[in-house]
Image (cartoon, rainbow, N blue to C red; front, top):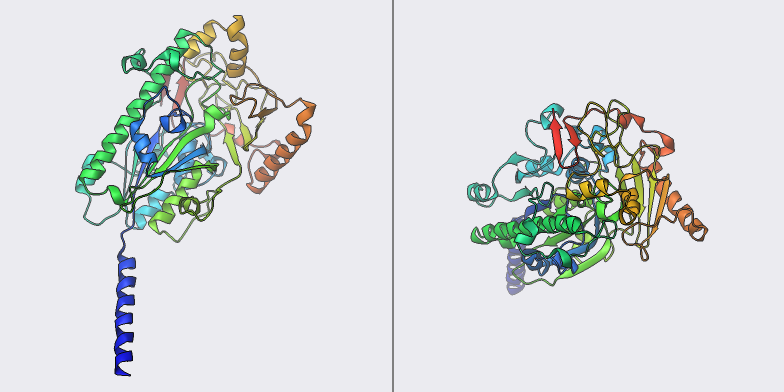
Length: 484
């Protein structure tokens, strides 16, 4: 009997020891690396051979590459606000617009992780553009400003961290000719079909890709710091982009090159890990609950995002089967509502189809060509060589149709059949062959908008156009001007 009692005692001690070990297992650090205007598929992890991204390749060997990730809105401020809060932009009040106000009372993962004992900071571009001082914040909603290397060196031993590294690449402006200088051949670029195939445009895209390569090199620097500090194996690394490339028919639009972005989640597990690819749909607002899961934060605010943890842990193969996308005001580029009129859109993107609803088709989607008293020129298309070329050659046969796609008015409905039209250039909304499909997509979008209490449901939402900007952004032919 005494031997049985001794055996039970040993088992209890072992069990208590195991419980203690599990309880004391450190929570992972989180390094969130966010690019600015980086479209899918511009990385070698997606098969693009015109660009060299070895550090992304390295991360992919230790994680999951997502092939159908989308930003909530193809505009910097609302996209970043959605990631911070896990909410659709239309649920963020004035935060739905570029340079809008993110209500301080809406919980962000920065606030929740800080309360959970994480050291939280960011470098370079956090929540932006906009003036956070005008909305109750004393610091950027992304956290305290810090340089990553200094932040790591000063980190108390054993304290987990969340760090947002927000590069400005590959946002405009580009140094003209910089792409070729780093070895990118403009002739070997897989140029999107919605852009004119001319040297000026190829050179512009080469410069864009050169900035993507620079972004990859900075990822390498971050990894070196994690390794030298002994933090690499306990750090979840997330790489994504806020929206798509700064070209016509891309950024500030709900077409794939405006909303579809790279997403890679990695961890250098000492036990080894197998590279994975996942083709199910992700909205980047899903990152917020994922971060909270990693940190063990139990108490949750109201969220629209869904944690990626079940997919990352192999508990389920499919995350989402479709995504809903939206856009309101990007820049101040229409005279109505005291320059506040946006171009409101909603969309549903499935594996086979993209359906877009334009709520104010009487407005110019790229903005008015000019607005008296302002420097705005087609202000929802970023300025640069491609924009200049397309404006100057808009009446030439090879450019005319492409200019119309990127700059001119659109119908209330758009439907694209993705297997035949990956660049979203042939609107099939009037094709009777797809009438049943269109109706089904319309109903699913309507159901989502109703369930979400979307201000644009049933034709409303004009209050959104009346929200003031914290900063005035005017886009010209060649650049951008901010007026406070």
